Image (cartoon, rainbow, N blue to C red; front, top):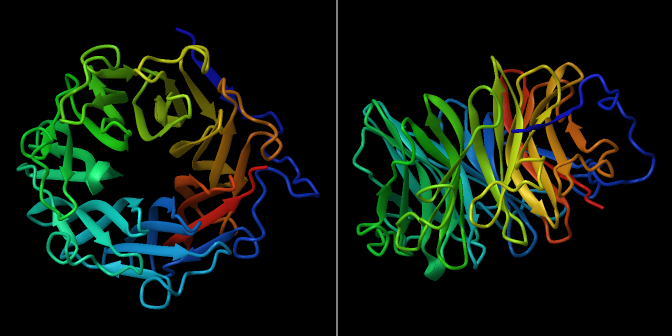
Length: 421
């Protein structure tokens, strides 16, 4: 099987000079004057980003300033914190009673927000959904004071992805573990916070998709109610890209994938982990993450047809590896931009780890109309460690990536906006 390897090492492309005029991939000067903004300066990591119906940028994650709490910020189109959110300063943090990690968000039709993640305590882990109104206050009619904790009855359990289904229902995905074996897990929750018994009988499902450990890292809810999940699953104790589809009733869709509703993709010689999923206009599915070879891992992207089979028109056999440098790097976000694909993550550049965004052509090659060589590196804080963990598109096509930048010993939310055309 041929695997396309796109290498930027030694090609002289990493140091390409910026063009004098604004061009695709440039930082957007209309966003916080220089294209980048930070917040939660005492410590915070952004894990997810979305654009609401008014074009505002919504970012969720967690704080790291002595207490780990859910953190959410909303920015107006110009990159300033929105004073209509969070009591006047555009930010909120919510203590759910333990170390509370916000890991994904979805914007609701009324511009409210739902965040999922995990609360950890010394004796247990528990996934949660936190529902906020459009001004950032918890929604009192949802669960207990705006919070629902989903229990899969396992010692270890977490949710890392959330989507919105028909009739205002929430779908979350992650993993559960009994201490020996880790399995993929999903739940569907009604608008009032109760488990939806129309999904797998009691609103929860634990999957067994491989002969080893597995986990869901991202998901999509389709218009028909099906749920497509992406993550990792072991084959012979080696993780592979995982993509699977469930029907609206929580059962695996046996018409999807290469067998029993699942496709597992071996991309490199080592562990391959899909961390993000997007759907193109033609129904094709794109997964992004990392592929390992030895002790180093690189960006990896795979594309599948709408029924979960590898797409041979992408990368030669459905997958490619983006090798930026000899350092370990990974892609953590992906979004479709027409026929092109935008991928975000972290990559070594100029002696430091930078937030990085790449744009691919439909066939998988780097789009060299974007930043001159297909990849934009953003050094948010002058040589410190930066990373993107999620990416989204605004209605005008501009690209918003969110993650963190380290200043001294503390990270803070970092959000950048790039021109797309």
